[in-house]
Image (cartoon, rainbow, N blue to C red):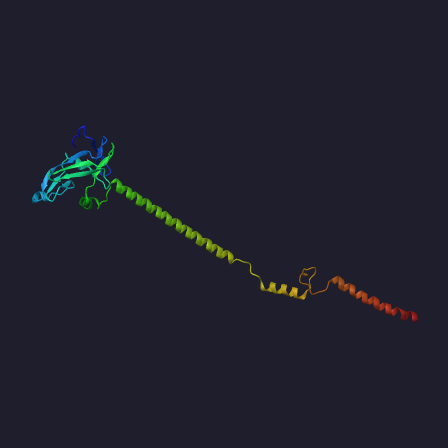
Length: 235
């Protein structure tokens, strides 16, 4: 890797996508950062038109810069969907200047938008790894996790309600049934009226009390003897 002069406000360092260009000093908006250079390719020549690599910078329909040479440090600048720099293309001069479009702080990676054609050909198939796209993917993953948890909680609440409803149905069917014979017996006791102090006599409500039955017979005997005594006196 070529040495970078100390007065340059950038360095090559490790990035998410491999190597990248990082600011070593504050870079103000509008500052020219670096020139993208390399061998000029003429599309009218079959030999030049046959060259293919990831560092071709098209100036117009005819001229293209082949920036694959290692001295071209601008080739380490990565793509970003929300960049902090831009490419200032000058077809007549056949030059490309990378210019800051935001204030860039030391340690921040320098990036620019490669354009729609490059994005579709090289980045879209493998997925863009810039900060903006990474944030979108993280947001989508978080939303997917939240939706999954929401659906799980909804299913659990539904299952709980179904279980409670089933339990209520079983509880209502366990009422004590009334026996037919017992109901008839109670009705007969009430109909006869043979109750003592409002209580049934243990199934003997229809019979008289034993004490009362014994007391009635001696009373009849006494009356009989009283009628027979005068006949003996007269004799």
